[in-house]
Length: 121
Image (tube, rainbow, N blue to C red; front, side):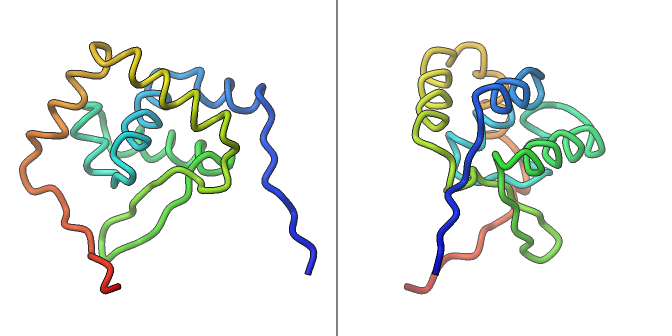
């Protein structure tokens, strides 16, 4: 079986992250591992249509994957992202804690956060 490796160029990555909503969402998802639309709405203090539109763009560019659990749609980093992309997200997140602190605080204090299914094994 032939394996095709996921390829993304620096231009594609930086164009995808050139919007404040998208970069904040990517950094929060990178930090949290997985977030649903409602959590991002709360953290980013923005509307569902706007958040969903940006997440769809990140997904179509190959940066994010989604999964449905009941009424929730969860987003996570594409596990096939090259290490350099993950490193950019980690370094950017660590270097910009103050820039993300309000978003992180809103997420942390969110009432009614959805409960993720836990793996049995």
